[in-house]
Length: 365
Image 1 (cartoon, rainbow, N blue to C red):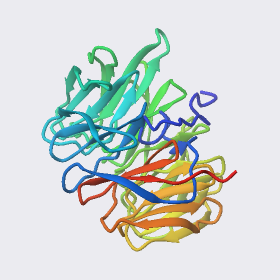
Image 2 (tube, helix red, strand yellow):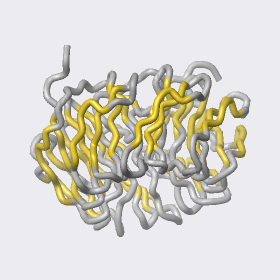
Image 3 (tube, rainbow, N blue to C red):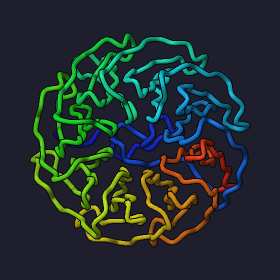
Image 4 (tube, one colour):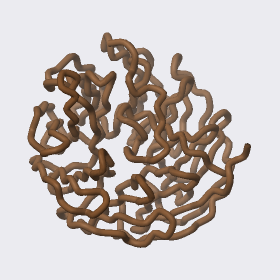
């Protein structure tokens, strides 16, 4: 496998909660240096799901089982739909539809404009990671990929919801499956394995033992995968060979955050209350910011900024070169979800049950 098809792509709308199918956590949106609270929306206590953004709408699930489509500028509800007993997973916007994974194991496809149900697909376990999408190279068939607590990654037809294939592991799958070179699917599981499987048929290409369960998603860039485990380690894995390139172990705390990947850095939050920036080639620490609460949400890189929330109740804009805080806003409620960024705005859900929308002013020229 050669070049990564999605490497370097950054989407202005935030349709995938890690930005693109390779889960690099990069946005092409521009942000100013302010954090001005514009509106809030109550979605249900202990909100864990992360928002996604497309075509002037915010899409968000919640613990009540109601899925919401909101107006970007006002936070007013445009439509809502039933989505099982609850939604902790971020959604995916793909080809005019919104794909939702529910706590009772359903993958649900709704029309993004109206909320009309297009199809449903049942897994046999809870879905906590966002769906992803890919294309089968032999016929350009579009497919949706999702992991489940039934221990399978499921690949279904994006138009009909019919099963294409499924791949079994030995334990739960928490994260979002990453798409590599539009030929392979890369993900980790609670069985402590990193898997690389064929996108076309779900057959195993190789697997790598990573020493501890994996609760987050693997980010893929330049034929390498990057992920933290629930012990104390962030790994770089050569996906062509399955060899571990480096392992970063600053403290004895687990990682629930998924990495953001730039040309030079791997940026990831930890339960040591730190946001870590690691040299992508060597695994050496470039900087670390110490928050006052653990960081389970995943960082988003926007130009020269890193956007992250913490369980200390603060939303941060940080300088990507130094890790210094440029702007912060104290919401006061724990943030364990990932921010969405679009058109100069930042959206973040908090465990008090509210979605918060911030404008950032005009970007500096």
